Length: 278
Image (tube, rainbow, N blue to C red; front, top):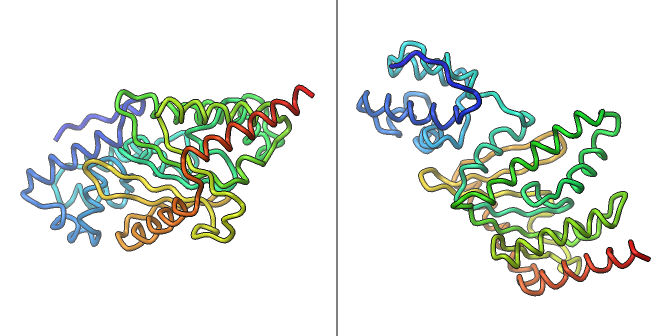
């Protein structure tokens, strides 16, 4: 196998996954057989090959030994692990970029993929009050770069449920939130995303514990991601993913229909615009 080191500016995780598939097939092993040798599931191997999961150094060393790849995976593992995102979100960000469908529940903030520059800046400034402008600018740029997935030639199907709190949580400027809500409304009217609002009147619901993101892929099992303050966890266990999927389905059942949700979003944006002008 080639001894080259991956270029971090390319897509190292996808490249590493493709090389793993070649090496596995060359060894005459199925995904389940290789997974059993590593004490992981065959679906986990499939996710490594699809690039939706990061290859940890421990697995890289074991793969080199099992597949007799002369240290290839260990050498390239460090390059594949390089990311501009926090450790707790790095794997989810990579998976998000490869997903064919993304369904997300946002309890407090507009989802990162839908944020405007001004809104993202307010969010990061609130969380990093002592950071300099250069650091904030880098965080904002990374977040806006993620949203480019919606502009791809074949973008993922993006369906989100916004808690009504998202529409009501104003930062320093009502103008910023109004602009952000108008951006969401425009994406809906362009039929690029599906949005529902979960109103306060819905009461208690299935995702009271926090945010939820579900991701589906063409050649890999689905994933669920839950996130808290400086923490996040990616799940691939079928039972866990099914449980989170049910929670999301219950949210959509209790949320306003898409047409009514759009009307509410635009109405709230108009109210903020009127207040700002006043």
